[in-house]
Amino acid sequence: MPALNRVQLIGHLGRDAEARYTAKGTKYATFNLAVNRTWKSAEGERHEATEWFLINAWGRLADIAVQYLKKGRLVFVEGRLQTDRWEDPKGETHYRTTVIARTIQLLDRRPEEPEAVEAAIETAADELAE
Image (cartoon, rainbow, N blue to C red):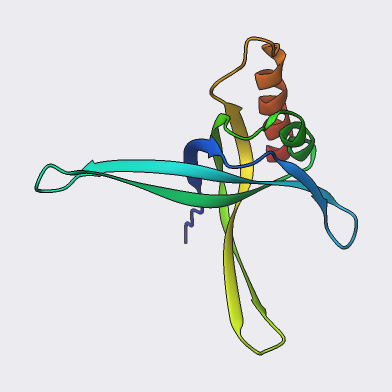
């Protein structure tokens, strides 16, 4: 039976990407992405809402994320959803859904950045796919 777990987001970074490590020492990058949505009510009133997503990038994509993803940048992220479940010491169950990035694309390249940055990010994503 076919299955699909894919998410595509365009938004602004809420903070700089930061490097973290698993208990076994594997490096990954984590950052938050704010995705805004606007609409008009039946009365013509304009509304806006922001959804926040926690993104993790692994491998070479993590290295590039830490180097180039800074607060406020506009980025496209494609990946999959992963939900973790755990119980705290009080016995309460908690859930956290994270986007595991497969592709990251900068949408607002800064003048001081070389065009090679986007190529490096795409190359890292291609290596993950192999």
